[in-house]
Length: 279
Image (cartoon, rainbow, N blue to C red; front, top):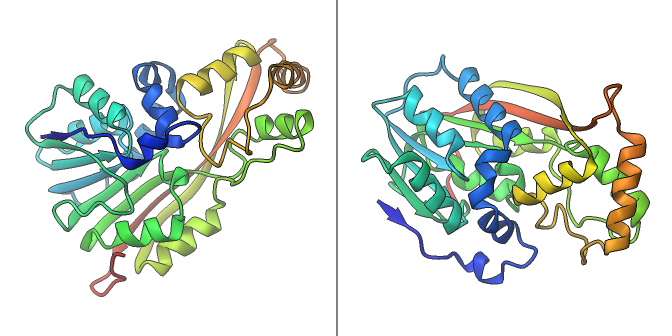
């Protein structure tokens, strides 16, 4: 089952997260190695939890985590949502639309689905959503008592080198919002009536041939949109050239490549018998 009508956000897509990811749908899966690794790590970290029968995946993207979910819990029914209809279509194309997978174009803050799930999970998507406490509260309300709320969230410091270089090149174009710190995420989870059972942070360094290849990879993944990336205007061609030069000069490995840092919070929580409600 698939519902692929464009979301309201897509209708105002210039510079938006949804619009960028929609345009990146065809290339995202080939390029997003770090996201694949994070999704795999998240699955490994929650294997000890009871096997879910019903799963809601939030921000399915091109289906990287979805594939792991289908393989790890072959008896589970999965609802997967994304605000980008192009990403939803890409997931369906990549995975062949198995009967136990239902795909929806929907926003996390308003989706209700079947009402309650054994597991609500996302990877490399929650940090894009705003307001984060409200999104977490709503999603917590979709977890059955005793169910699992599992997420891998990019934290402040992710792409810190790029942020620093951009501020040096264009200090007047400060991004309107940053990805969260771990404490913000954990407080929101606790405030939503969830009990954290596992959380840990990991830092990964990824290298690229050069700064141009790095920036192209981010662009082709749709990572260059939204309040986290934009500051009221795109970089000019001259600013972009200076950014590349600055990055090449400051963030080069001993082997001639450039590097970028990704910081991820892995967490799993359960919903107590009496928990916060959605909304």
